[in-house]
Each structure stands twice: as C-alpha cells, then as structure tokens.
Image (cartoon, rainbow, N blue to C red; front, top):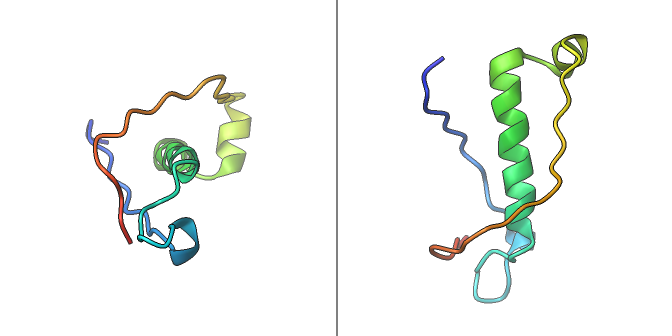
Length: 71
C-alpha cells in the first residue's frame, strides 16, 4: 500500500444548510467514515480487525476549518 490514501466522500443534500454549506458537526462523521475505510483498506473486513484484536477509539477530535465544503 502506498503512503497516500484517498477516499471519495459524497456530500448529501440533508447534510447542508440553505446556503449549501456542510453542517459543522458532519465533518466529525466524515472523519469517522474515512478512518473506517482506511482500516478496511489495510486489514480488510471487520472480522479481520477483530481477529487481530485491534481496537480504535477516538477520545478527542479537533478540526480546523480551512475552507467550506459545498454541495
């Protein structure tokens, strides 16, 4: 596997406000989705993750907004 991981995430209409800007709280959900897909890319499906006795817990998340995401 290369050092770079890319995942295309589709922003849905319900995740945006009337100005078509993504709600701030959705970014944490997006991070969780990308982490899950990254692990899936490394270890395969969830049963492989459990067999390796590997756990991932996010205790804290801090985000800095560099630009808005639009639909």
